[in-house]
Length: 472
Image 1 (cartoon, rainbow, N blue to C red):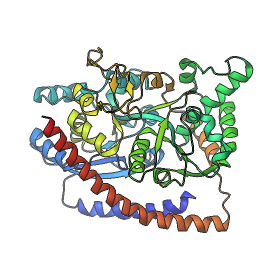
Image 2 (image 1 turned 180 degrees about the vertical axis):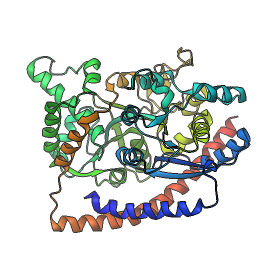
Image 3 (image 1 turned 60 degrees about the vertical axis):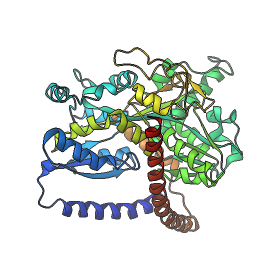
Image 4 (image 1 turned 30 degrees about the vertical axis):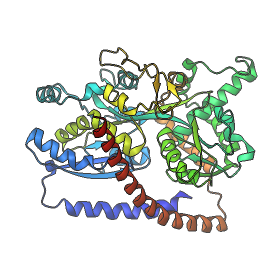
């Protein structure tokens, strides 16, 4: 289904890259910073601001060439094949593991660079939450290498269920069983991201097995230690188990989506969507404007807590500007702007960020003392009881039932084969024509939405800035 859509997008991307290449004519490579990031994942007004800031700090000019991707593996393939000399890339945690294992990364924080930015008073790496650094330190890396030297956190979140409260109750959304509810046939969308789907379904399947065998009571959940172990499990038996569950789900699924699931939810063409928390925030806000009530839940059986981070690939040619760019993104005020623009949650957790994200008008109160800490590890005052959006900032009780994904190494191909079998290519001619028409309409509608989203973002940013100035 997605192949035809990708052909169009691929052609557009090739044209864009060609034009970018033409635009670079006459410039020295060290004056260009190539950034490769997820789509809609940054406040793009920060890009020209970085160019100015970099010249102020170093006396050197730089121009950013910014490109986007929507699948980790697509990005990784370009790096692995040496096809692109990107200076800064933003992979997910398990891809960071693979890149480190294959010696594809350069250190970001070197003694020389740290001394340089300390002398200038612009070292913002200490603004990263100690919790996030602890999670990164647990990534698998070659002996003697600290993952925190090779990857700096950017955004993080959970994987859960976005649901329409008109058709699904809060209680129903507390279990992955909802994904198998035949009442929701053709109203279910699932992220086309095999790792983000595989891990939660494995947790759910193993929970049911343990209950059936008597290891767990009817309402008991797997301990967090077991969930963390399952994050490494890509055995043949577990792959087969997940495949059997996904094939049951497949008959109910309306589509496997990389990005359009949010729109399907806001239009009520879908009632539930297995997706990332950041996308859920965007969809909830958009739906509210058209009087559609959406909500998000992380099922009690357990799920995934994911992290994206900045890295410098070994083929990078402007390494100095890359390190400055990553440091610039760690400035608390820039982290707040990126959150405002994207709906995702930054790993920057200073008092300034907590104050900006606190909303005393919300009823929800979260214990975020695990996240908002000073650099010495002590919790920021009041972090254990914060009125805040709990989709953006999950309570400690949610985090304590989530595991971090890990790279499956040589087993990844087996998992991808399973994913391909599940999705299949069993489209009829009529369905294919319908899909082509659908995507044509969606593309036109998507362009219009992008324009409207940009205008909305500008209004939102202006409003937030005005509110902060007024507050001061």
